[in-house]
Figure 1 (tube, one colour):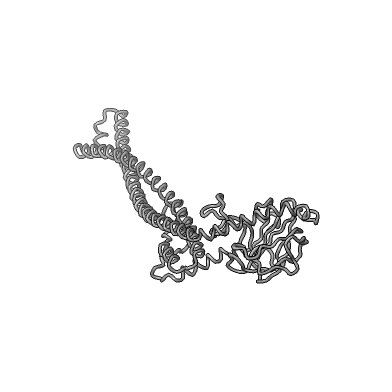
Figure 2 (figure 1 turned 90 degrees about the horizontal axis):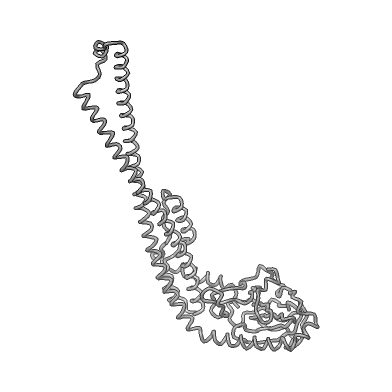
Length: 413
């Protein structure tokens, strides 16, 4: 129904961003510290890449409310803001979860390290006591006198036993000193590691608190934006009801026309399920809006779509104004000039349950009238911007038993 709605929304939002004074433009990106655990750092980088350099969301919402007068344009801008907020909130929740996991992992490592240090300290205390005992013994008895050992030995074997014993005592002392030095070095290193881990936890907690605060702010803005959207939708409710009622009436007429013209359309060669591109002057590259869920409030309601549950039931093809439009298949033509939503509208019945819709036309081809059989590829009208349209384009639908389907299924776009 609309031409380049996404482009219009982007233009509105871009204009909004540019209008905001530089003093109010606030980046919600956060600093990613390379010294963080790798998973946290990567999650932080991904978060920043996902949100880009955003302006302050609260200010943007206020600006949308204050500066955009057209109700539908304001709804489009708000939905764009909500979509951006949803992406930010999802990224923030992912970053919070990753950061919290790293904090938990570091807490666990700190507990293990503290337990290890307690055991090591106890072991060092034992070693220290042994060393102190040896030092007190040496202090009381003096060091080993090897001359005395030789002179007081009764036999050669006694001498050797005394020498070996003395060597073993010396080796034991050296081993005790060496092990105690290693344990002290290990204790100091583990203490340093523990200090680093504690500092990491402090930094991660600060990052977590900042991200959670920003998340709360974005959630509050999201709720406010949703409330504004609901208010604006209420303003458009009367227009939507008019469009819906007219569409229902046209659909009912099409159902009756299908029964009336089915045989004639099939006899003429329509209803084969093969369709021609309806705008020869402009190919697939001119598709400005595809089939599927959209935020344009005046589209039809579809519960399978996310909020606001609207679906674009065809494709929009944006060529030059007054470009020729041709019949996508042979069938019986029917005209609906001046409809509310689609403006100047054409319905064609092709047989075997197939029908096509051509909306927003500037006018119809001369010499045609409702109920006439038109061959595939024949001129039926000209591209325009009538009805609910933001610019020249053709709204094109393919229906099966009056149920709109994605035209690209048949056209290959």
